[in-house]
Length: 469
Image (cartoon, rainbow, N blue to C red; front, side, top):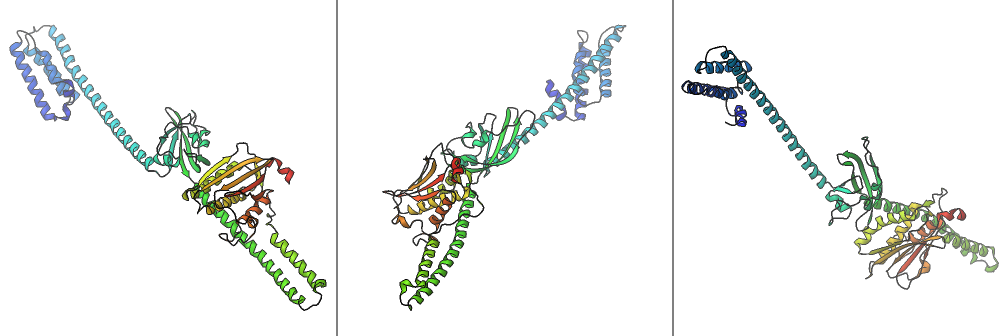
């Protein structure tokens, strides 16, 4: 029997069976030693039952068995009975009992090792199960989840991350995170002191094809054996921005309608006064020289001034220095999906050296949205659908042009008049847009084209705002 088999015997044998086997082995060795002792002693074979018994008996029982084997070896052997028997018996007893203790300890250590291995295997199984569950959770998560190493390269990215970053056909592993989420490239990683960063932030992301989107990010840093890492959950909140800005534009138009109703009421009052005076003048000879005629002229002049009056900004001035590139990025997020749905190609041409402009950020974005929506509606029946948005610096002022391939404008002189009959809604979009632009020292104008339509928004550069105020 091999030693590993002997050590494994407690798993396969019970105590009674083992003791019967030990007794049989001792009897066999004793019988053989009786007949073969004239030639040589078989006392060494008593080690076998000692090793087997050590796995099942106590230390006291093991000592008694060692004494029995020593006595049998001396009794059945042909060694002379002199003082040497004491030495032989002592060393024999020590050998038997020592080997038994060795086997006991070896078996105990083996059981501890097996138990440790069992615990390790169970922990490994649980770890693999947890990793599988975590992997499934990450892959099936609707939120984009990425991890970034210490040099700013993406290590792990789930399927949602590939969709959000526009990389369904190409893996993100190994790509620099700054190419998609520039703000994450500058986030400090966890250091060796164990300090970590947990926060949320909002930034502009860029898909692989260059499309800009608004990203809301939950991030945290952590330490691994390979160095610091960053984990981020990314949400595309472009739709929220789109809804928010469109709601703001709707509210602006609603409040403008209230203002126009008030203006219309005054116009109606003046018209009523004109009608009364006109009725009186019919009964008076010498109309041209009468005071009523002069009053009629005064009312007509007042009516003309009221109709041509522009909207004035509120008393609280909200115009500040605005980064035009950021406003155009937000415009891109808002308008591109709807334009893409109508198969309109948008071409952007924004100069790199644009200075900040003097404007109200949300008001300017609403003006741009109105111009883009007008172009979208104008190109619905066109075969070629292209919208070019360009921003340049001309003579110290920033000019943003919206040029489309629509049918153009039949009567440009009526573009900026209120209550356009052919317009969708109240016909106040361009009227209010020009009033808003003029409120922060700018201008909105129509630039004639041989084909299509072009509107130019001229804005004051922030560096010259002091001169304009």
